[in-house]
Image (cartoon, rainbow, N blue to C red):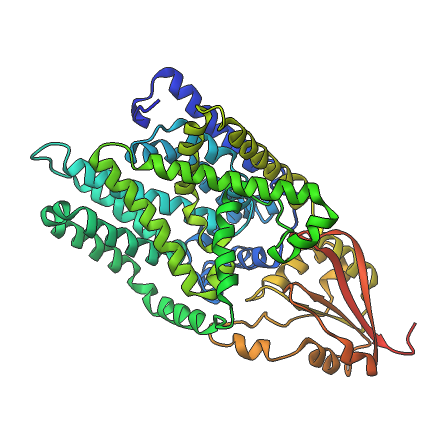
Length: 524
């Protein structure tokens, strides 16, 4: 099945529409079950206000405003709810499935299996069901590559082929959407143009004027955001930790390729816990190791086959492989990007899944290859199950709000530390707001005033010292920490009673729900 997506046979159209329906259904299922977390709260905060507020929050969120604007429009149409705030990610995920036949054809591979892998993929389902911009980023990276390849191929379709303005507009809009979604889009665009310069010199010699005009129009459209963007990028780079070790960076970027296929399967495992797992849960340890090896064997097989084809197709495939490699090297150069590679390198997913599909098809033809394919299918299904029935089933903020509404008095204060730019506070207040007591509760967000450049100052304030200050004015302090950093409040025990309250359920990362209660020692 290699037909152009606009030239499908009737049977192919039915199959393609089935894939789109599957992609939509899998992304809508349990979409509103999981409560907002602090990161999503930043988007909710932007969407719940006026249009000017969107740009203010986006600037504080250190991201371009396109995703925030799209969610704002969705919320204005349908209201604020978990499902509506996450709807843009769902549509971007379905859009990626719609795009896959074009991208597959541009690279000279059959569209069927890559499209269905995109529809089924638990990692992409997770991105689509999260109110962050990464599902939209993946879509625009795939779209920019697709329009670029189609642009170049059309130019050489006939000896005197002329490119229509429409073709340039498509590429320009894809590139604009890319850089308006995430600042990493500039890296992607730079790599695309660099690889174009290296592999398609004939095209550049013939069309350099049109390319410059398109890029000039792109910069003109983006110009109003340039001052804010430079400040954001400079500030964010200055905030990056230089202490991240090389080994941790490598673990992060290697792990993303496993996550792209397996989703949240074995997410609670870390390399440091594998030795303990070997003795305590040998079956889980063996399953993880086997699935890890099978995924990389399939990717290796896909890599080898990727170099087969006509010369032009091989050029584009080699460009994609180099693009993946350079993206990984760039991530290794920035510590926080490497250790959060599941976010920042998520845009590689369509290309990794094309490689995986190519490898799986080849392995399935071999008697020894079928077990590898079966293992990967099982891991994918496990990832989908984990997404729906573990991740989306987490009680999170709802359970926290239930406790606070029942226990927090007028002389209490709730201290939060987690997401930046007010997201943690918004998420908590969203679930508190259903009751009168919740609406009037005193809440302080330690990172709520985050702006580019002040993170070091905010982190310098230790939770223990701030709690001690608040105890001078309040009877009890409830401390909720969502940074997943080690929390040490033992210094407070000289003056106060520190209790760790356990709630039922888990948070979005699968950790137990807990909140600290700090009271006077004689208080019961």
